[in-house]
Length: 179
Image (cartoon, rainbow, N blue to C red; front, side, top):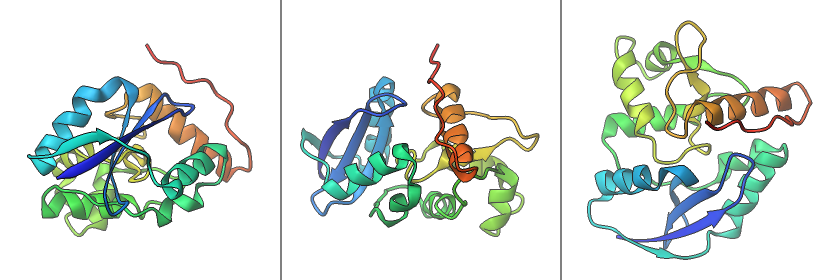
């Protein structure tokens, strides 16, 4: 599979954008996770070739708008993923979590009709290759705490606070505090 890779600056670090020749976003990873990016791509597509390219303007503009305070464009972005049928079901459900809200893994499991599958939902959530656009950062622990995130908990915290601020009519100005 031929894929392109584009790099884009953001408030949460440089984003690695990966897409296909049809313009669908296949992966979005953070600068510190090149190893994770290649591991996910290999797991989902086995045989892929990644070459430098330019993300479609639609993708770049949607992400720029998200960080500037208008998340509405993310919903229209075309995405395509590998993964199992169950993973794709979870990832589709992630896109249905309203902007600025969070839910628990158990709530997400119930939404997909698998109320006893919290752990499996968590594993699928962790294997999500398209951060931000497929908003796995909106899933938290049952006790309301932020739990695991491929980009690290500081990024998850920043993204959740950014979205909550926008819902309240404020652009989040917090700095990303990476260890």
